[in-house]
Image 1 (cartoon, rainbow, N blue to C red):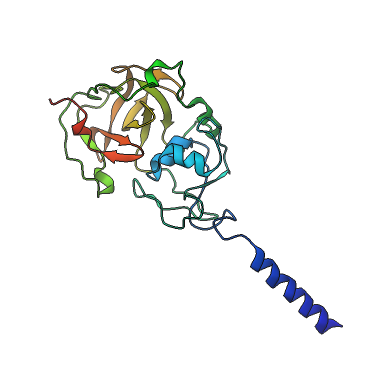
Image 2 (cartoon, rainbow, N blue to C red):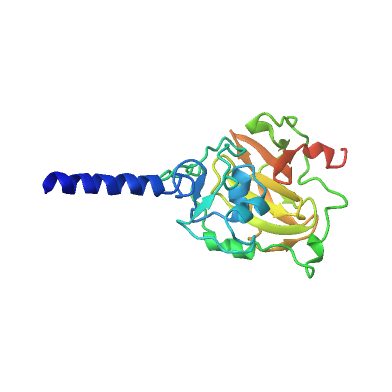
Amino acid sequence: MKPVLAMLIAALLVASCASGRSPVDAERGPGWYTVKRSDTLYSIAWRYGLEYQELAKWNGIDVSTPIYPGQRLRLLKPHDQSTPAMSAGASVATAGDDNTSPADGGGAAAAGGSSKAATATASDPAMLADPAKWIWPTAGKPLNSFVASRLDRRGIDIAGKQGQEVVAVADGKVVYSGNGLAGYGNLIIIKHSETYLSAYAYCQQRMVEEGMSVRAGRQVATMGEKDRVAKLYFEIRRNGKPVDPLKYLPKQ
């Protein structure tokens, strides 16, 4: 009876494997991300160069739905095994991966704080349309130019002095304020419309919290430094993709 029993067990195991879900469907392997304590839906989408609306849709949630530490989020369109676009040199997470450790320490905000970064509503006048105009985030000259193909040039560095004022470039809502994204230091992300987001990195001090509405010119941070050089790293993203900030900011 033992050989028969062994064959039966083997047959059951084969059947189980054959009927099991694919690695992506099983929330394992490439294309999945484990939510960390400082994450919001917007910061995860920013890290991987995705539209936050798509990220929410792929995971069957609303953009205002809270996320929580340990939650697994799909980074690929269902049934699409291609690699998602990357940003800031991040790699797609695999099961058990630590999802890229922050370069400047973990953020203090809870992942559930993404509920504060809710989608715009008709009662939010700052979020009804794309910005009619933009202003410079700080005083200073650009230190480099935008190059979409280079991960470290998908924005511009603006020269200045440590501690100088950093302001919102247009009306919007703060959807991320923390230091949980490796390579950005203290980072603020502002949602200006369903199309546009802006980001302010290497900040010395963050002066706004997630969920706050801000007007153009409102101070959101003070300038910090990177590689011993005082500067602000600034990005604008349109539908999740980096665009040249100099095409939106007024000429100096």
